Image (tube, rainbow, N blue to C red; front, side, top):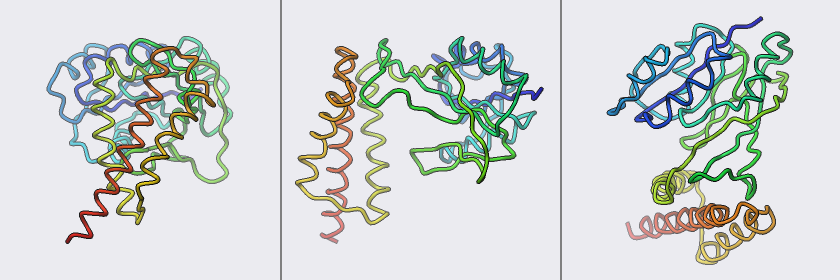
Length: 254
């Protein structure tokens, strides 16, 4: 039976970290929190909940999550963000495969809570991800915004029933703030890769994004906040392309 180290990175997560740690206690043999300078009560809460807490400055998500793996006591890793938690069904699935580990990694669905509403449509669900794996077979990879667990070639991946619960945003303004921050990063990354855009893309791409998510991906079934999520996602597309366009124009003036 493999023993599992649960690994969590944090920064000012006092609102979430207690729930996250409580949700993994049934499956964890070791709980590691790597903090990057919290100014709130995150560290104290994590310690009170029984986690081993370490601190290191934040470079980017890929580097920090791979760094956190080095503090784990066991090679089998369950990685969660502080605003995530395990459903009871997912806990039961993990306990079952601990007694019968067959694959190099396991993926499961992530269900997101937005302002108190579970979002099951609009492209936000099932959002399937590998988060439980043998760390000798892979690690975190990706860019500044999008990190994912990549396993070695020929590694096997199983699927677990149950949801990883993601408590994303508690207010619309919080979501808008992240969109503004992330589109700064994503537009610059796109520009650095040679991507350019024009006014037609700025006009049409956000509209298509909204229609696809709200109508074709059934975002309207999630009610008012389903509409808000699709609207904000379209706005993020608009901001990204507008900022990319601005970067190009500024470069032409130099």
